[in-house]
Amino acid sequence: MLIRTTIAPASRPNSLRDLGITSASDIGITLSEFSYKKGMEIFGEREPAEYVYQVKSGAVRSYKLLSDGRRQIGAFHLSGDIFGLENGTHHRFTAEAIVKTSVRLIKRQRLQLVADNDAKVANNLLSMTTSNLEHAENHMLLLGRKTALERVAAFLDEMNSRHNAAGVMSLPMSRRDIADYLGLTIETVSRAVTRLHRARVLTFTSNNQREIVILDPRRLASLDLS
Amino acid sequence: MLIRTTIAPASRPNSLRDLGITSASDIGITLSEFSYKKGMEIFGEREPAEYVYQVKSGAVRSYKLLSDGRRQIGAFHLSGDIFGLENGTHHRFTAEAIVKTSVRLIKRQRLQLVADNDAKVANNLLSMTTSNLEHAENHMLLLGRKTALERVAAFLDEMNSRHNAAGVMSLPMSRRDIADYLGLTIETVSRAVTRLHRARVLTFTSNNQREIVILDPRRLASLDLS
DNA sequence: CGGGGGCTTGAGGCCACTCAACGATAGTGG
DNA sequence: CCACTATCGTTGAGTGGCCTCAAGCCCCCG
Image (cartoon, rainbow over the protein chains, first blue to last red):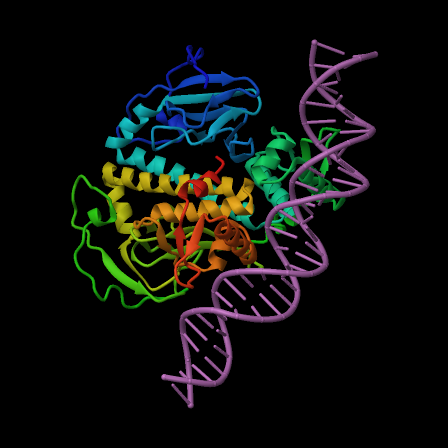
């Protein structure tokens, strides 16, 4: 529930192409930019969906809460990812910056206006929404039917494949975030990581528990028993 | 992996409107119809997505399997629901008829062709996909963070709200289907239903365990502690 | 150097799972 | 139409995987 009075201190004219959207009629839509500090809320659940966002750098978590505080993170958004893309008028998640994060943003209504007339844009949005749906479908299988060890392995595999650099990766999110993404507790996540470490599937660089080196990607992926 | 040689024994010219899709250029697209017996596979995971379906009568489950047989049902499709709507070329779920089910169907490629040129159609597809996404997002919260009792209550609440008739509803799916939808076992589902029965939240008509009367919708919904 | 948050590890508990038995029901073939 | 069988659903007893609670370490950061 945060009101942003100043938008895009470093705004400059961009186009839809920068969002990965191609348009038939290339209307010059300008994208703004904005930056969030670690832990800041980008938008809240049930808030009107004013903007659509793309991560330029950093990382974002989007989650739902139960009234007693139980949290389910639905997705992590890393560099390049689009989020906050709603069809309705309100957000269905709360989105927060996990670390210092800068985003591109575009007025939802304006995008909708373009999509109403441009089938190509509409199909791009459809394609992005389908990607989100596919991810959610796979995550339902994980949450409903996989063991703790399988969940953590699948998570590391997902992060590994989304990371550019092979082998070593630096996770932006805490154990709590991982736990709330996987439907576990932090202790169970920690124990699973320890097991994978002892089994020489992964190791750490230095003493930073978020800097992980995948030693055996095949064994990691084979815990995806799908 | 089932090959349908005869399509639409009772086909008659329908339009996209019957799928709930409005089109700017109302191209006369004809919809076929087909019928499936209880337990029949409509399409399989990873199969090419030839058709898009709408339930005319009956009920459909769509699910994913792990290699060892663990199953996660992602959604139940009841009368009027669209399913098998893929953006890519392959199905991401297996779909089966839960009971005798008849469906309308349309060639996916033909729908795609229309959507490519008609923004209105594309936006309709986007809207349907978004509904599926919203359902999946809520289901992730259920699977990741809710107790067994909360899950069963949420399930009954969902079915109740999707049913036209108030009060009494007749579930087409078995306890096993419900369990695989909620990420539980059949025994746990059964025990939860029994608890709700003893708490006078619901009761049964006759001796059919699938004919359920919701006595106290508010207490049922209040177990949705969201 | 002290405080605090993040992470790990251990001990114990509980909720959902497993295994098992049984009644009720639906489907099948004579 | 009825026996027969398989399937479905419930219930109980016991187990186990993950959660809870607690302690302690490490690192970051003031």
